[in-house]
Length: 322
Picture (spheres, rainbow, N blue to C red):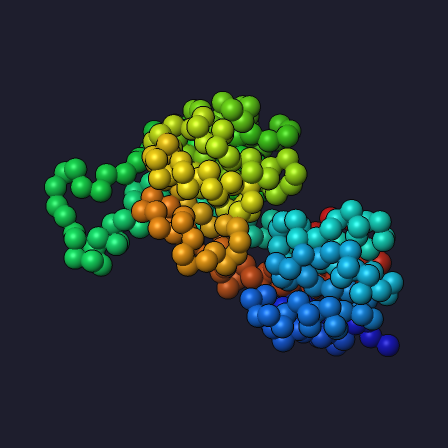
C-alpha cells in the first residue's frame, strides 16, 4: 500500500507532484494560506498521513502534530527558513524534517540587490511623481545614494548573504562587512570582513538582513540599533519581518534617522493596505517575492518532494534539518 503524503497548500508546483507520481498517494489541500478555510481544513485532514509537505506560513504547532497522529514520520517545508515549525517538538517525536535551502539563494539575492537600488535611488518617490504629473527637472531633483564606493554590511553570511556579495562585486563596492555567530571560510575568498554587529551598523551604507529568525534575531533591528546607523544608510530585509521592530523602523524613516528601507518581508503578511510603513516615500515594500521565479519554485517543490520520498525510504534527505 502506498504511503500517504499531505500537501497543505494548493499552490504546490506540478513539478513536485510529478516527482511523487505513482510513488506515494498525495492529497492536496484545495486552499491558499490567505483563505479562511485553509487552516481548519488542514487540521481536519491531517490525520493518518505518513508525510507532510508544509508549504504554508501557518505555524506547525504541537496541536497540529497531535492531530496528525503517530503515523506521521516525515515533514518537509518548501522554504529555507524553518521558523514556522516547532523544531524541538518535531525532534522530540522522532519525526524527520527537511527544507529547501540553497536552491533559492540566487533568486533571493537578486531581489536583495533590486531592493537596495530601488530604495537608494528613490524609485518609489520618483514613480509616484511621474504618475501624478509632478516630474521635475534640475540637478537637485530626486537625488539618491551611490552603491559604488560604499560599505555593504551583511547580517547573516550564509548562502544568500554570500550570493548577495557576489552580485555586488560588479558594482564597485569599496568594502564588505558581515556579522554572524561564526567565521565563514568563504569570507576570505569573497573579500568580506567579519566585525561585531555594532561596528557593522555604524560603518555600513547598506545593511542587508540575511539571517534566520530566532530568539536571538527577533527585533535585532530596533530603536537602539537603528540609532547606530548612518542617516544616509539603507536597510534591506529579505529574511523575516520579525527581525525588524517595524514601529521603530517607521519612526527612523519618518524622522530621517536613516535614508531608506527596502523590504521583501514584513509582519504580518499580507501587510494591511493602511499600514504606516506603506505611507512613507522612503520605504519600498514588495510582497515577499524573494524566491518567486518559475524555476526556483519548481526546484523548491522538487526538492521538497525528494525529501519526503527519500525519508520514507529510510534514506538521507537532500536538505535535512533533523
